[in-house]
Length: 490
Image (cartoon, rainbow, N blue to C red; front, side, top):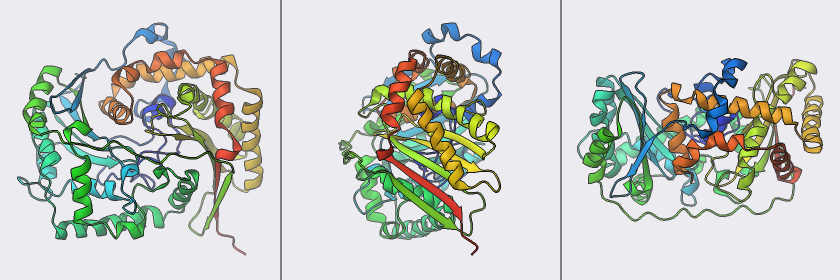
């Protein structure tokens, strides 16, 4: 699965999930969920039904939200360096268990694109005590569900089971943290599976091909330019040795985060974590060393035409700062801007391009602040039938020019902040929300305190902050425009 993306979503969840297609290796070209995903890559807004919030709910309780804790987790660190986060949620007698590794596709060795995603598949192939696929069978026999995903910045494995089965999950997940067994027969067979996955999800999908190409030209030097699933010719060179080398280099308790949410308490989780994960020794893990992105001096444009395209689309993507990169002071203002411009049917782009001008069938934006390095701020539109793409692009650029030139208003910022904070109020309703938010945040340089303070920090954003962030980010020289078009008939 790959975690860095460009599809629309609500901004609180975009802050912690991000748009869908840049970070994951199966949904689109970047998200590898080989089973049914429990969490949409679009993020928290979809998870908590943000589109259904009434204005009354938006306003309820916001006066005291700045002082409120969102998830109120308990956290501790084992002697071997494993960080553990526990979120109590007693709505049902079930628990979600997630182990997150601080490694992803952007940490692969040169020439080995796809290795992180490949290893994610291979982690289901057995250990010294369990045969191939046996862990998955145990989860199923105990009425649970499980999956995994790989991103540019992290890799995660998760299970949802009855709360009285948590010990079973911990025992076997800790086992494969240290005791993975691979053979050439298993590895080479799974490599063929990855190649077929790439063919079906990228090579046969024009939209995925365009996003992959846009990503490759968006980043001139940084490994975010690489597809999480990998380039085909490099996937073919992956083998048992490359997979095990990656496993031994990065998979260690001191390079992982355990998040457990549901019908549990911290004392119970601590006891089980120390019993199973605590027995896994810490290992030396290298620091992430990623090439820096140089200043960008020229806009780029990519056009893909295909007979498979039924709905044309236009995407404009700007290089943008994240919470951990230079320009991080703009991260929260950009989340507010994202809500103003692309946050649903009341957003500027939707109202103008879809409702008022009648040019677009859909319009929106996407921004992810939690990348380990820099991010992008993306705009997308698709035309109504018989609307010329050049006219639609002109209209989109006019809207972007207007916000750059004139800025946003006090009323827009106030409403966007209330909408975002309201999403946080309801974030605890889904069992899977908190583990995904904390896992992503803690593997990309943020802290538990920063997650809990998100509503307060959004509340502190001003019009001046948003307008400064807009002008610093929406610069033509650091943009890529992507056009997806049907193949000409003449």
